[in-house]
Image 1 (tube, one colour):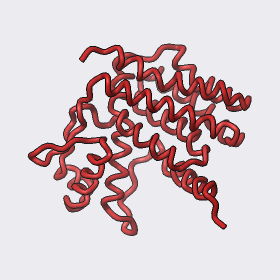
Image 2: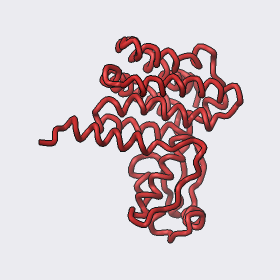
Image 3: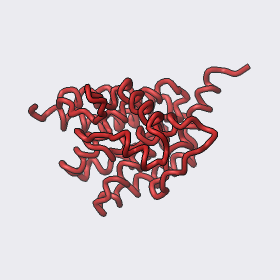
Image 4: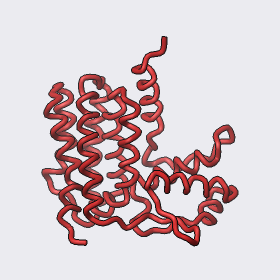
Length: 241
């Protein structure tokens, strides 16, 4: 019999394998997978890591030309992103990243902190030694990225760090909701980090999280994750519209 946990584990493993390598160029489109799904996943990743900034317009024609495909699967992918509140569309059928009010951005980070601390509580006892080793490696690499001023690499590794934890929670539904929130906040995280920089205390959070998980201190790991995500809650909550 296939249990719910088995389904969640397989889903989590699939999502973990799908985390893009930072240095790797996007793979060519696969004939066996629907084009609209592949386009959707590419655009979702671009939004998550902040390759599109607030206010940016996404051109159906340009994306189709870059991928050497027809405009229909691109249009379908963009409409799907609109339905997931990652993009907005206008009367002239253009698609863009919305400029959200600071209060809404702050609220999104607040919801993220609540859900991600819960995912961490579930995952902390289940992460393997190899996975924890990977968390420590990513934490060190992120610190190097900040020193180099390479914010895109930092954001990509930050995603890998967090979702290595969350996919171990064995709760695919929870991870899917968190992914959706990351897609919505991605453009703002990238711009916020680039604008405000990162304090030494915040930079150390990821290593502290890995250390807490290695010690199987679930309460501390959960608290640190919540503090890490709440950076966005405080930064955007203090802005004036």
